[in-house]
Length: 147
Image 1 (cartoon, rainbow, N blue to C red):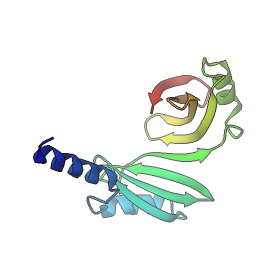
Image 2 (image 1 turned 180 degrees about the vertical axis):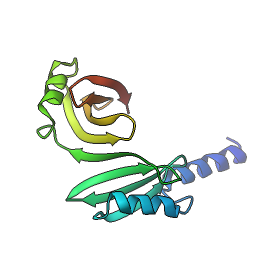
Image 3 (image 1 turned 120 degrees about the horizontal axis):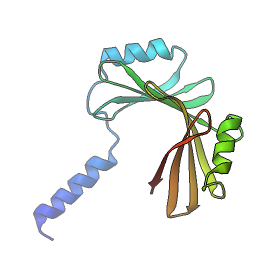
């Protein structure tokens, strides 16, 4: 391997492993966040290049909210449990072809365009995970594999 490629590889690994803030969070973003989540604590911002994401605690729940650089709210995700899912979503999951898989994580999603949704992350084994997204009526609308 040439020195150029080795340098490039080391640089790529360094950049991808650093969770550094690339840009300052615009005031429009922080102001919009404060209006929407006035009681949030332990707020940490991450620059996602196309948006800004705040990770925070609200009412003892871990949450993540995304905003455009102009301060427009995109979506909010909060961790939940399978037991706390609406009955329609539980029923939709039980009727899906993934009902026999292990549930790893449940997220409630409030999306500016799609409304309320629920993501159920399931696994078949250590190498096969799926992100299942359900509407609040229990309809499976997305089924994506993840590593």
